[in-house]
Length: 361
Image: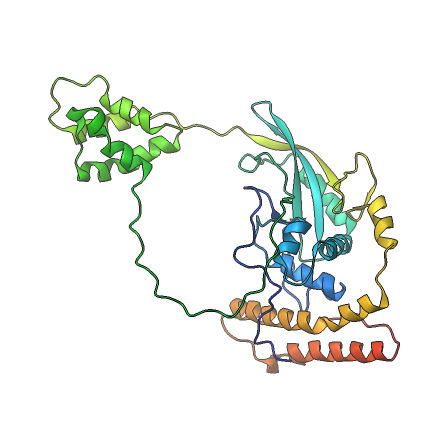
């Protein structure tokens, strides 16, 4: 099986980001990529897992967002796959109670992803270790689960002819530069030249980074001037340096409580029992709607599509790790052939009324 064509069921560069600091988070301590990483999952679940694995940190992870971006599956299919991926040990929703120095508190729901399959005990220890973590730069209010209704993604059509790109517009002047150049209007005695504005721009930017507004810069440079100013640039530099506002320290924040949440309904272990990332009610609901024989056949037939994508991306990762292509002669059987053998074997087994085999790497 050739793997020249990449999978259309992979994230696009326009995949929505979650609120700053949230979205997909790596649990860390990953094992190297294997062939394939998600063979223990049903083909559809494995395809959704490959899709998630290729998302960048911070990308939105709600099932509605994933379904809108995935070209093959809708919301219900994606929701069911997320449930099974969670039970398999790749995904957890964890609620963290954040306490900030300014006495504010909030709950946030984190989405942690692990390409490596983890046990329930491993995730429990991971959650315990989150307690007491310093999250000063990562405690914005809001939830990690971004569930806005998005338009369904449309597969890319044939690429149209590209028109010549227009000349890029010149970069706009920074707020610091504009504050300095406008000083001549507020105070004619402090008419700075172009060279003065450019040389003083870093100092003015430092003011703005410390919480000052452009009007604060104007006030500091224009108030209390002598009757005559012979060197506006030199005076402006001295004032910007001597009147620099203090550096503002962001209030420290830390995790003061951690609880597991259900990946399907968002209830947490304060009110329901969570087992392998899923509550008992959602598990009973999923078990009451098992996959039909037709569903199983469709899932196994799609393994060819998944295998091609997995083989392609595994090859690319190996090439990046080794600095060049890895010849198939270095392997007992080429990756594409292994995928093809497995797919054809399962197709024949189903045709003869036998259950499909799971891939054993």
